[in-house]
Each structure stands twice: as structure tokens, then as C-alpha cells.
Length: 340
Image (tube, rainbow, N blue to C red; front, side):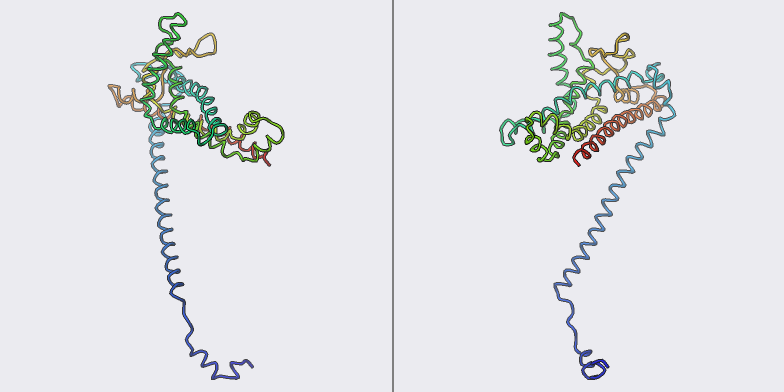
């Protein structure tokens, strides 16, 4: 027999005694938690709707371009030259000029951007006035409008460097005119801040223990940076290169001043040797879109060409970016496996 059954009066007294409820602080905390949970749900929904809205905008843009231009993309459109006032034919010179320009830009910007980032992160003192001045210049260079780079390229590369080369070579006008070489160097100046910042982030991601281990084994600082740090930071360098490619492939304003033309059926390449004529002008997909879409007297007739050219420009940028992303992922896996 339980104690409650043995003493019924005690059990009734225990039931009649009021139990203490939750304190005011506990009630306030519970109410606060409910309010916080409500705000979390609200902001999660708002951020999700914003993300969905961005995805829908991108999908609508890509869908419009693809539906408007895919049926115009034929083999002849990809391999022929423009004809009949840019309203017929193909756009092969523009494709070739865009690809050649981007690769020349990569060759020019990658060594400069990587070396500058290595100096700033590995050699320069953070509190040095020179280091602060360089970082201030890099940050401001990233905010300069692209048309200003075009004017600088015209004044410095074409008028100063190009004409100086012509005088030194005894030429009349060879390099002292807008050309694909000066356009690539102008784009290199435009994108060098992106490469510097991304490379510095890649260098900062390399653990300090890796550097110390290399130095402890007897390697010099240069050998440590060249053989240990830079290979480990290669994914970050390629990230900057991807961003530079995406920006350079779509730039039009500076190129209109330093070498891009409306029509250049002759490719800037030698027929008998596989090298570019760096002093020649070139066509570009971005300017071709502008010219055909806004300068043509028959807008309706050229509308499919505009969509098709925009579609090819997107495909070209995505293809170059995917190539760089593939190389970056392989380097990451290789570095991760070697670190383990």
C-alpha cells in the first residue's frame, strides 16, 4: 500500500496546495524566443524570395536570348564573314578577335598581377608607406570607369609607345595606331586589380606552417614561394583569372578607342605562319551586337543576328570560365591530396 493510500488526508492536502508557476523571466525568455523564431522565418522567406527573383531574372534573360537566336546559329554563321551590310553572312572574324583578345590579355595580366600580389603579401611590410600607397592605387584602379582606360590606352600605348616603336624601327605607321596588342594591354590594366586581390586571398589561404616547414628543411624564401606557396595558391589565382576573363570578354567601351573596328574581314593572323599580327585591328562580339542591333537601318531583319551573337558571346564566356574552373578544381584536389 502506497503512502498516499495510507494517508488520504495528506494526499488531498498535497493536491490542494498550489504549485509555483513559471517565473516572469522564463515567460519573457519564451516570448523572446517566439519573436526571434518569427523574425528568422520572415527573413528566411524574404532572402529566399530575393534569391528566387534573381534566378528568375537570369533564366528569363538567358531564355530570351536562346529562343531568339539558337535557330540562327548555323555552321555558316560560325565560319563565314559578315556580308550585305552586316545583315547576312557569319561572325567568324568577331569570334576569332574576341578569343585572341582574351588570350593576349591573360598573357599580359597574369604575370603582373601575380608578381604584384606576391610582393604585397610575402615581401612588403603591411605598415610601410609604400605598401599603403600601392594598395590605395590598386583599390582606386578597380573603380576607374572603363572608358578612362580606353583613353589612357590611346594616349600611352598608341601615341607614346607605338609611335616610339615606329621611330625606333624606322617605320611610317605600324604600331602607332589602334591595334589588338594595345587593346589587350588596356584590358590587362583594367583587370589587374581583380587578379591582385584574388591572388592575395589565395596566398593568405596557404597555412603558415607550410612556409615554416619549407624553410625548416633548408629552402630559401624564394624557393618556398616558387615551389610551395604559389602551387598551393594556384586555385585563388585562377579565381581571379576567371573574373578577369568574364569582365574582359564583355567590355566594349575602351576597345572602341584602341583597336576594335566595325568590319575587319581579314583576320589578324599570318596565312603562312601561326602567329598574330599584333599591329592589326580586329572585330569583337560585343561591339558587333551594338552595331547590328542599334546602327542597322532594318532592326527587324537584324534582330535574329543580335540574339545569335549574344548567345555565342555567352557560350564563349561560359566555355572559357568552365575551362579555368576545371583546372582550378584539379589543382585544389591535387593540393588537398598532397597536404594529407
